[in-house]
Image 1 (cartoon, rainbow, N blue to C red):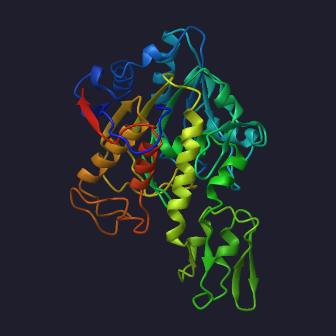
Image 2: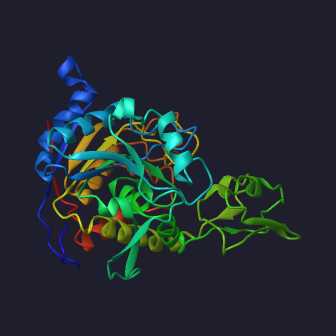
Image 3: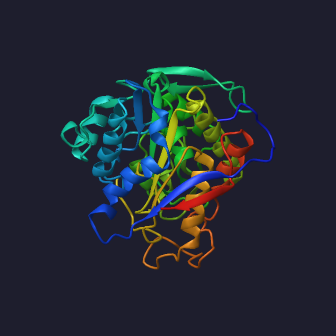
Length: 377
């Protein structure tokens, strides 16, 4: 990651791509994971006995779109061949669920197949038992002077970031940048990112049915005489309350760039100390409308595309975004419009979001380049 920030002309980055076509054993998805790891030159990242965080999402219980543990095992084996010491990791959640503390988080990971017998590596929750094992990293950016990163990720010598590419209510899409930002932050760091944008209630639409109260993981909604009221001091900005059958709960979408910029600044802080020591692999498959934090997995909005890898998270997210948009949208999905090739599929689901803002601001901060050369293997 460049130390220089601000507008600049950037050189195109290399992004490696493998599609999912297979006619023999050497073309299986597991072999493709191994091959793209080596094609991208990730072996040069590691030194002997480097403690290496393999950052991924274990999936909320009820979700099944997370990265297949068999693919993660292939990455672990590639890392161990270099003499480095990998561990699978994620951080605790801000909202209620089965990943809010390390005990239930590890239990969930095991239930989803991320266990020692499959991975042959430990699973470590990087921000500790209750999400407060953190370290402040100085960034000196417009929203944050420091960001709160999970200490075990910050302390790791190297990192491989494994991402499931999918849609997201607030950021448009979730790629490597979001994986770094939310995924590497402690619980208080997640709160800091969400704090700029909270939902509100249109009292004229509210019928006082209580659906929002029942779904709120933080018990931050009360019913008053004129309708539901969101308690701002405890609201997690998670968006669960938007289940409202009358669409009475809404976000001020004008504030979303503020959320996105905060998110990108956290991603910047997560990688600041690991220059030349990070590789990124993204799986563009099961491209669901929602994040893997939801306790369900909706139907994919486009067909499965392939596996991509790069040392540049901006170029990688841009390439994934472009490949999704070049696809034909699936009709029996949450996609409401933009089914044609070249149309923004994520706006076809979340019409008010601007996923490209992640890429614009990340490039501005010097995290990488939106220009890329796609190398198909």
